[in-house]
Image 1 (cartoon, rainbow, N blue to C red):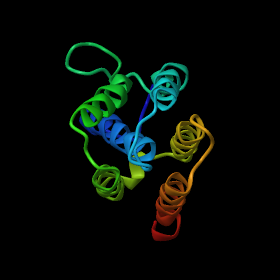
Image 2 (image 1 turned 90 degrees about the vertical axis):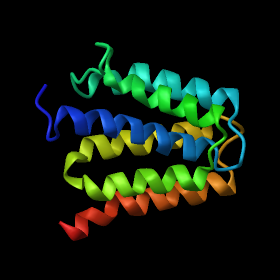
Image 3 (image 1 turned 180 degrees about the vertical axis):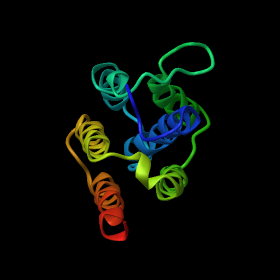
Image 4 (image 1 turned 120 degrees about the horizontal axis):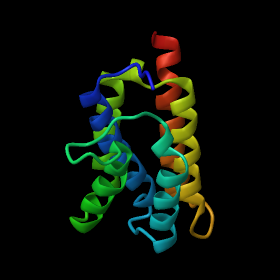
Length: 141
């Protein structure tokens, strides 16, 4: 499948999506098992089909989403720091994010946030920031 980004950018994109989805799950300072399960099912059901990029081991690069999420969880990184890292990557690579990909990002983030007792205030705030970020380039480009 033809993509608007290089293989290296694709790998970095998936790693940064792991940071974003971690930031959403960790917005309330706790990652619940249902949020982790929702992430894993979203990767398998949606993200594996996005492109044909593989990591250095021949595995679909979309699994980098889970790997980075798990690493951040293990090292208890903050939601804010993880979100800011995604934001920086996004701003540096806006053209790599197609409208379809932005919809998938939004859908995945919302499903993670809603997976444990609905969306709380902290999650709503980060989802609103994400929505503004993903729409910001539409005026800038």
